Length: 536
Ligand SMILES: Nc1ncnc2c1ncn2[C@@H]1O[C@H](COP(=O)(O)OP(=O)(O)OC[C@H]2O[C@@H]([n+]3cccc(C(=O)O)c3)[C@H](O)[C@@H]2O)[C@@H](O)[C@H]1O
Ligand SMILES: Nc1ncnc2c1ncn2[C@@H]1O[C@H](COP(=O)(O)OP(=O)(O)OP(=O)(O)O)[C@@H](O)[C@H]1O
Ligand SMILES: NC(=O)CC[C@H](N)C(=O)O
Image (cartoon, rainbow, N blue to C red; front, side):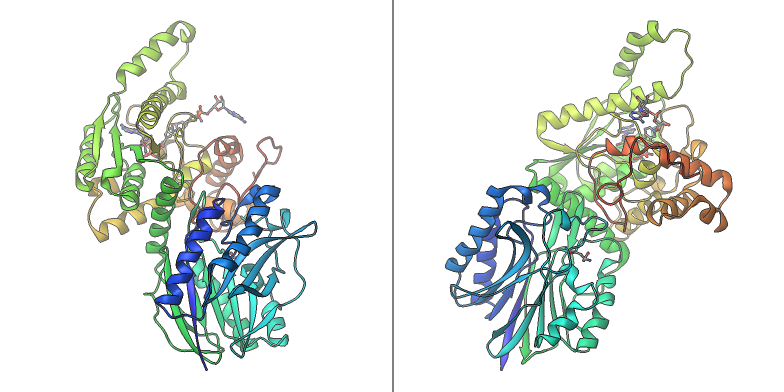
């Protein structure tokens, strides 16, 4: 007996239930008519999009989502449909998967393992189910699982014990670097132990700071991947089963870390701009590597005609910065404007001269320059409906090396979870595809150019020291003693840690950005601003 199962790796808009239902209907009809599938599986909570956050606390929203299940049952026949939705039952809400076939509900499963760590907050909204759900379809016994269920020991085995011969998993599994192989490695031993083949369907798309990479797969009973979808794109594919044995199917090219990171950032920008209704994006292009990378990502995400840049030289801007910025704008074919900030800086300096008389120059004057640029860029954003992208990287966000309401002004911060060393690697990776960033941008020492001959390394440890310290302290929660014991200089560890501790206030005011590491600032690392804790 053969069975064709379609995997609908789809991109949903959180909160737009009507659009999501239409999307499901279109994909189901395609799977039925063009792929001749018997069953089509969608991602976890696809009716609402994931994560719908506190929309899930609204009764009107939940009612609409539950009604949508009935609409789907009426609108689709000739193919079984497996979708995820927030199920209202009595006074409880469950994260559920329902199987619909020719107007009949064949099964309804309630997620048992509700993740509540890292970026996940499911126990805020959902009650947990307490049993597996196995249904019969064309003579085959099929179990259902929802995302975290297949990460927790026991639930896969419990499906087997309940009689399942095949397991369908609906997922909303966000990306971070290396996550794809982590998924397969975590799940494969359990599948092998239970000898229970698995169809794993993940959603794709950007949702505020989270990126969902897709990369859906099918595993046979010995835990081998026999089908692997592409990452970061929508894909509707079909895998054929003889009984419960998946036949070998297509395998997407192996994923590489640097290319996955790059694509995650591109998709994050693309979906934030598209889903929030912007006409495009703009940024300040300085001739430095951060804005160079953000520009390359934005163009790859939106196309050159949707992106524009502004060069805003000051008295400290070196000629080579302007030259390199123009070279890059031309290489990518984006429109650029040159708006020197000197008149605005002079106006502010004059306005403040009486009050500041007798004070020495310090970061105040540096920040005025960054803020003048912020005002220009936000004016362009207001006028043109383009999203202002900020260019701060994770190293800078960690230590507060950015100006509030200056270069931090903007709507979206694409590289705020990309450490500086990775900024360089991503820029080089992009140039290996086609050269868009001038070589000089990649080799000159980083500088804020807010004071004469300024270099980042005058005030910060060199990035090849700073980044590993930050990774240990921020992402791995290591103590200063652990970091020093690993061979780092005590003074540099102390400087880095005290800056991280001190700058939570700044990070809270930064725009949202794309998460690509296992721990980003934001949903993932929630520290008090007002705090007596000292990491050093
Ligand atoms: N706990 C707290 N809660 C709320 N607000 C707090 C605060 N502590 C200070 N503040 C406020 O924040 C102000 C200090 O922050 P802010 O005004 O941003 O200024 P600040 O952090 O003092 O200076 C910005 C630093 O970033 C560097 N920078 C700027 C621009 C670009 C780059 C680059 O290379 O990309 C580097 C610049 O060289 C300078 O070292 C204080 O004057 C105060 O108003
Ligand atoms: N001369 C400039 N023209 C346009 N934008 C600028 C200019 N200088 C700074 N900016 C904007 O402010 C951001 C912070 O710039 P700055 O040079 O201070 O820091 P950076 O971290 O070295 O960034 P980059 O590597 O892009 O230069 C830049 O990425 C850019 O968006
Ligand atoms: N939505 C979920 O349950 C996701 C949790 C899971 N461990 C993952 O990241 O893949």
